[in-house]
Image 1 (cartoon, helix red, strand yellow):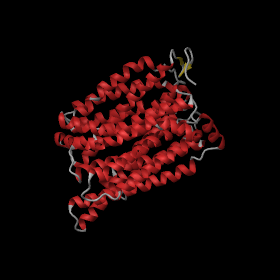
Image 2: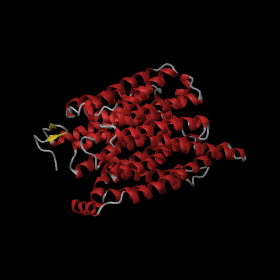
Image 3: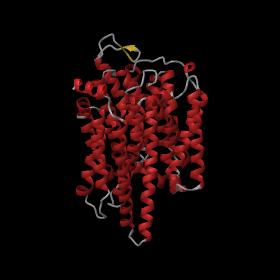
Image 4: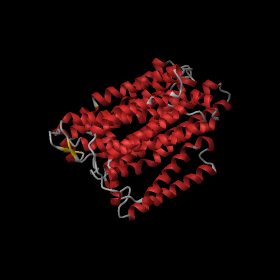
Length: 487
């Protein structure tokens, strides 16, 4: 049901129904800024390396310096939203992210850029962790919530593709500094309306669940886990460095779970995992995002290193992915979910993604973009079905008191999956490329072979996600009947 004048939504009366949709635009704008920054750097890295004198190993910290605090702070940020009020946390994150973006854009040394990227990651965690929880609160009606989550998921998926386009254009036409400075007008466009449109939320108060020890354990464990994953390119998966830091991360995360089981007011209530939909959706997302984010990075490298595209051409080459996802997420996803249920829509989208990556696994060395690449990028439209369905399932059983931490959990699994996917698929591609070079293949042919194998592995991960969704996310009869009535 829609909001009426005087109805209480997100803690305060809302004067008009359309106010909630304007609030959704604000949340989407903030999320777009965060998503853009995750991919806009990708095609600008060679220019950054040249200007600031990064080594090959040091350059990876332009991405890692953002990912590590982002992943490590999401759960804590989500809980802070429940305790302090999600609006306060959202606005604080916007301010922090915008300030760090300005420092990135003004960076004159490698150390300054990496330090600013760490602050950016912290601000991004604050914004991302609470956004989905606010949407769930703003739209209690399932039909409206489906449309809202569809729009939010579109911003997340299409924004990643837009980031590559924008990154390529800004780097080639202006300067790499502008890939960070472009965040400032977006932050203003989101922050100023947010102060008026987002209802103030007092939160439960820090006394209701600060759990400082749990916060230290999970933040340290997640940061160490992501650091271990992103460092595998330099140290290898079986090195003492990887095994040692990986073991330390597991110890911290295990201690965090023990702490949550015993704490009077846990940071992450383990009751969330009793929900089959919450736990199943996070597991499926872990597999899917590992494949899809890794694919997104590697297909950009394939276009540049094998087909010889420049930065701007690579960005525009990725544009059909964003457009296809937009058409499905905004035009079809919510209606199909109401008609057939989230699980069926999820499985359909996952099947399309499997076909897409399987198609790329047969890329010839001298590929044609129109024949060998574009069809796969269009099939990525399945992501427009998958992402809203997963978000809806992950948040379906969250109570208003736990919506912030449930949102933080969903974003945490997404971020860890992104780092894991890039690390695994990049290692697969590099290892196979080295083997082909040793066997006598030329450089371009060896690179093409390495990318082909990584796309095949990604297709396998998506197939596992399909099976997991089919088994773990089975709908109850009552839910199927409710969906049929709603349609």
